[in-house]
Image (cartoon, rainbow, N blue to C red; front, side, top):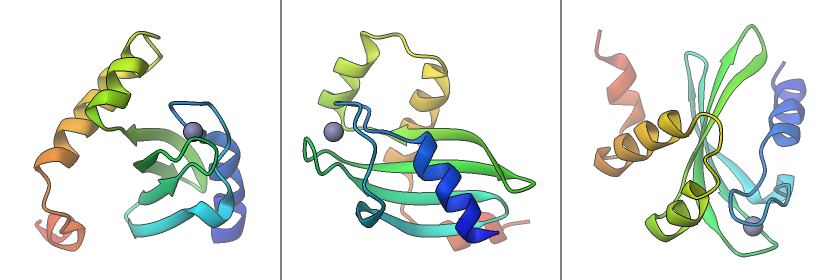
Length: 108
Ligand SMILES: [Zn+2]
């Protein structure tokens, strides 16, 4: 499942700044739990670094949220892309988040 999923994910995500598809070699899985995949990405084309949170249900990528830096966001915001609220929400979340995903998802 993992390999097929990764192929789908790579096909779906692209750089929010220059629009280039990420090279699979530049995508690193930071964490994966309960259908939420957190990936660190690096755009080989424009050098942008960012975080991607992907929600996976039944093996399908249902949502991809990209975290951008503030300067990158301002450029991105002008395009009024679909799901901007989601991106903003995740952006704020990741800004405050200490990186402890295991702790976050084990709190029941
Ligand atoms: Zn780029």
